[in-house]
Length: 134
Length: 169
Length: 335
Image 1 (cartoon, chains in turn yellow, cyan, blue):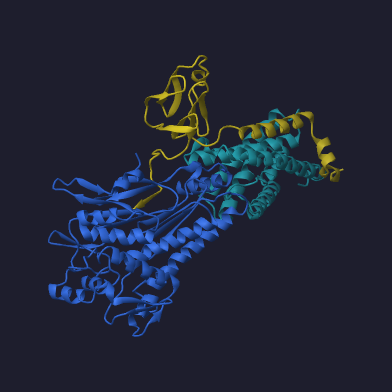
Image 2 (tube, rainbow over the protein chains, first blue to last red):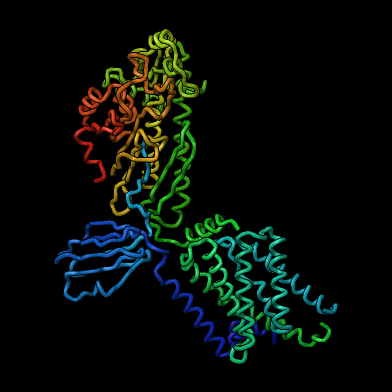
């Protein structure tokens, strides 16, 4: 009888329904965690309008930054190491509703204005050189 | 403690220590992270002889394993402590309160999952990087569940086999 | 409990799992040619086996640096250069040495001798690089008489001859040559790359997304600061000659290693020169030459070179940096 425990079917039978539910829950839970945006706090927000990069904002420098979007200005605010859309000239304001983002990989977008903000855990100083000639 | 208890516990400690050492030999892509096989022994102690026995066996095993592997006081040791503590804690609680719906297998799965979470928590805490450890959770956790089932099955089988000899043991 | 192991653990662990690493490149640093070398390579299309291939290429690139050093150094008796110097008859050198010597003579001609590959005697009179000290004028004169690019002649087919009592010093060009060869190799085998040996560097290609490489240039008066950052992509090299690299200070006067071949004494009036061009060897030699020629003549000569741009840095009385640049140099500046 003990040996029967060690076949897949035997194992399955030995599980109570609670066991099965638990195992499933845990598996899903762990898998889900993998979908959370990875990386720790972001350090820089890369702003593009259309396909061109227009600015790199260090999240360590609080302030308001107006960006010229396709339809008008979009004002970004950096504070507490996060960035959000403060004001936007777009009609629906979905971008404003996206709230604050502060983790690497997160995104803010104002589609009508073509403004895209991508967070990266890059160097706090986006101007740090790759190498130095001396 | 009488001689029987001491012998019994010593055997368990020895078994658990051997498992811990054997486990450290398994090549892992991620160093210092452990599978927690030795927690199976703790589970056996838990279901047969109670929380005190389980905690005692685990604590001794963790220290002994650390000494023998030379990792005492180092990062691997901290992870071992954190993971095992979490595993024992959750297993003890679930064994007491959740055993009717759950079986030993369920408790074992909870133990192995807690082991993963415990290790990650220690890692995140001590390296000062906090949530950055999250990416590791899926891989480790998803393997921990079947591992817990298998370990639990072994414990269940051993428990059944030991039943006739309980008085002698 | 020490924290470092946790960082190392986390780094190793996250390194395994983070597939979205922005630079997705490999680097290597080490000691060669008497200085520190730093190599970075970005694989073109990463996949399984990329790591092994990149590491192998980096190893080989390092080997290239060592090979060039071995052949062109004046400090080993068995190097090409040493044997050439000792030989009384035409001596056939390796391709590295041959190419470097030819390039050296070209720059010497183009700069009217401001760059000179035969400076060995003078460098030794000054004790560079190990034990610099100010020699007396007689010694300088004697050494200077043994310096002239005419004393080195190609005899064809890789053979060269050097007049007796002439000492070659390819330090001002061989490093650049090594950098170029290493960069070529990495570009071919891995992808866009950056090779920096002691401050002479070359880039190939650009970073992901077409982003240019960012190259800082050290402030000649403050090694912790950069006075300019350049944006380079494609086949580009940067070389800097400065009065802060090797020198001896006596009575508050700095005697640095960039000697004027015509006087035998350190060139005055310039603090650093940075040259940008497609070849690091050429940039290296020209940086030295422009330094010797001074801000006016040097810059004029540089402007005549279509493929080279550069900046001459001097310090005025108030201690502020003054930058004199060629017209095309601004295009490389990071705005």
